[in-house]
Length: 127
Image (cartoon, rainbow, N blue to C red; front, side, top):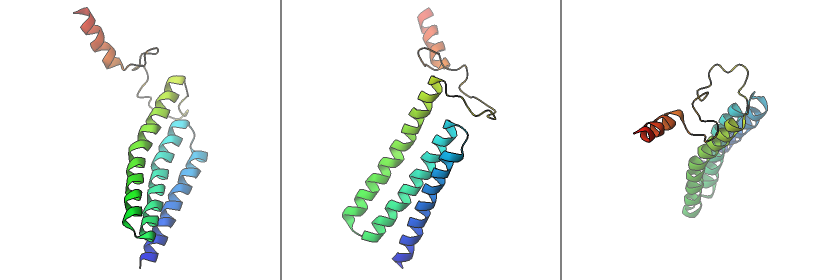
């Protein structure tokens, strides 16, 4: 019975990693590529690791798998955010069909501080 779980989990993991790879090629801009790869690849790697833990069925391996999955869930979104933010500040353009740029005009061009932070800082200086 566990063989079916292993086959199912590893197949789903490989499918999500394949979808992440296709997303890198098919998405029109950097920001969408980051989104696709962060979500799909993290899920795919997690499923493959769970399949490996199921296959070996040992506490030592299962605890390592849990630690790796936790590490991936904590670091992948942060890394993607930092890459996206650096790309935005260096001037990487959005896709031409993007409707809304939520960050346009909200960051100071030199200090990269949010506009709300700049307003409170100016208010504190004037007091």
